[in-house]
Image 1 (cartoon, rainbow, N blue to C red):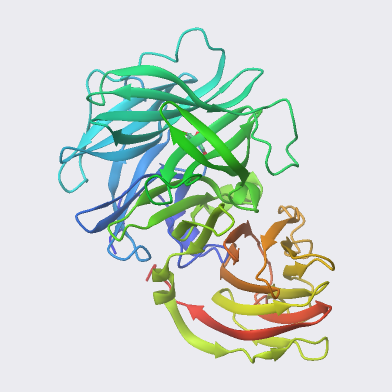
Image 2 (cartoon, helix red, strand yellow; image 1 turned 30 degrees about the horizontal axis):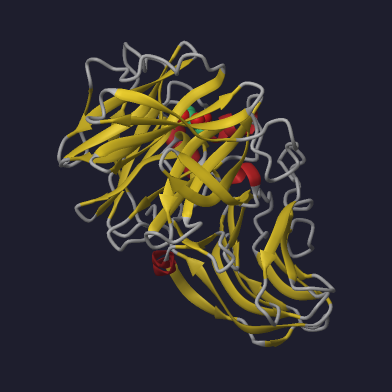
Length: 493
Ligand code: FRU
């Protein structure tokens, strides 16, 4: 794996932080936020990302770049976009990469003096060298007559021999908005209208389906076969008054210039810990998604650590039987498994918890069966005495088929400055109370999947013995139908 040689001393610092993941993608040091420009180009996966190589703060954002043959091991590539005199002087913000008749082309948001404007850059055949168009920005300003909260981030696709794009925005007093544009050549764009707008006047930040005053990182794609109803998906990240909240989805029908929603909900139950996701269709026809795992530590701790932000593992998105998006780690993630640990099947009574030692980087998978009213805990990153522990709970309602997944980080860390907000939400259970639970832990990064619902979070245990795992029944009757656990390999040798 190649490393950029220009990185400062924070690179060495970051490498020794026990909270730093070892099998997730991260830059060598500095700051990472959104995934950008995702593509599989002539077989190679390309991951670009919002990056400040100089410090772990969101400032003068570049486009970092990495490549992979398998979606899980990555090589660092030279920085793709660097802010320069012009409309991106203060930052090259989020965007996408499209194939313009064989020319790799990036559409991104130039950021200067608090203004965001769409810019274009064309790439060399290996996607390593990028040239910004001399006449950037390609859109001079937001549409006339609209009072917008923001105007940034792009989703671009080919349709009926023309290009279409969505730009993330919000209409003051109305709510978030995805603004639709059209073009023949990616350089001259006509405004069509809002594809969809939200409603900022109802709901609050505690409500996981309220969409805030601005939609960041809009992403539109189709999950079902052509013509199937309700199989188009719009994803956006809800932003409000300077704060990032959570990624949302709308399933529905994209027809003409409008999107008619059917279902709306949180794309990940962890809130801002899986933020600004972007997706692409790979050569195996899968819809692959990455998202940004933000930090839960305070600024001074992050500054001392020298790094901030983790890219999620690749997730495959499909349309669930309930018509909502279902998320699961890409199959390639299992290539990182090593040292299998057996977890006994059978009833999960109070008396016989399964105790394991898996350390700080592992993957646990279990098919559980819950009776009505049952709850099962999977405790991870636990110290011997339980002083530090993070508890993942799957439960089934006493009456009716409803299930729930939750994470309790109240004792996740002895460091009182880290975020410990509880998170959770509904999970569809099988007809007999079945749930396929997968919990992947990589030091401070935790990705939980339960029957297609995802819950991503961060935990920062302070003690070196915080590597215990326990699977136990907490209430009611439940059993383990099958289960396995593995240590995970380092991708950063
Ligand atoms: C989302 C976001 C985008 C913006 C980028 C800037 O996290 O705020 O809206 O383009 O990050 O880095």
